[in-house]
Image (cartoon, rainbow, N blue to C red; front, side, top):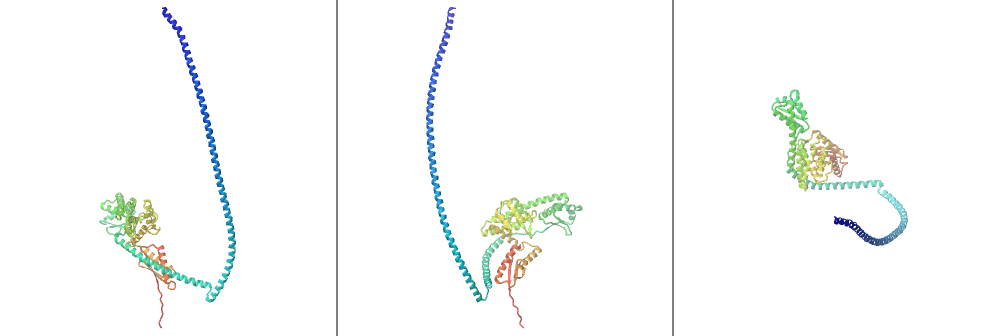
Length: 514
């Protein structure tokens, strides 16, 4: 056991000694490291101080350079400003000198003008005295006063000018007529010869044929309920009288009248005539008429040869089949105007398709003028604008009756084609009242002119013959009178075609042999 004890004692003694030795060695190592770190930190601080000093010196140098540069630029700008101010001063001085010189010149001129005015006043007084003296001598020689001489001179000049004016108007009119008539006749005759159109005269009544007179009672119904239902549904008046095997449908709206005609014919064929069946047949007839209008519009644009027209405008075109003007079918008239416009456009060398389009749509307002307020020109213009038609078409619609000035050649062509279609013999018919009123207005207009003795409207109002007083109207005055009457007729009357103004001046001398 003793060796073990000795070993333990040795270990107990050696362990503290070893620990103290290790601690002393570690402390010494740490002190060495701290010393080297402090030395290194002092070196870093010294280096940083040196770098900071260098940076400081460099910053000071840069600031001094910038300050010097700014001072130089300021001095340069100051010098330039001074030079500019000196230039302005020199210019102002020179302008002041110029103004002084001009003022001196103006003063000299004013003094010269004053002296010249005085001289002119003296000369004017002398001239007026001489003129008065010469005028007195001339009046003595001629035996006329100055007013009489002036009146005589003005009258002679007026007669000469009137004669020259009438002569010039005659020459220009005859020359223009020769050339215009030749070209117009060629274009219009060619267009009319190449255009053939059918016309159907519509009236305000339609006649439906019956298989027998017994059908009249069935149409009337018990206590008139069938006829009342039909009239209420269609808005058309049924006239059932003594006319054998016929019923007359009367109404101003041709579309309603067509609906009533189709419905009544189908009821007659069907045989079952009672209020419920009448309502069913009227609804079917309305749909059929709407389809007919669309088909007629499509047929019209196909006949004319144009496309890309809005479907609503196509339907409105077809609606014009049931609209008439003085007995002329509106749709057929529009198709004829479109064809004539295209032919005239090809003759004068403008866009044929655009001319046809404008001609076809020129009366489109007539399809709605029974339903809306306004003239057919205003309504047609609004419809064309609504459905995005071109400005050329809109202007043609607005100007084809002269309400608006035409802005292009196509509008003038449509205007001429519309007149040709309306003025063709047999195309339209007028009521007796309208016809007699126009003749009376024509004679009243011509009789209102000074120097007119009598006037006669002849050839159905297409010519007016005017007898003038020979003492009041000279040959030269006749030319001017005919022109003035024509202008006034154009401004105040509406008429198809043209009116010939024929002025007649006749002198008669009567004596008796005794």
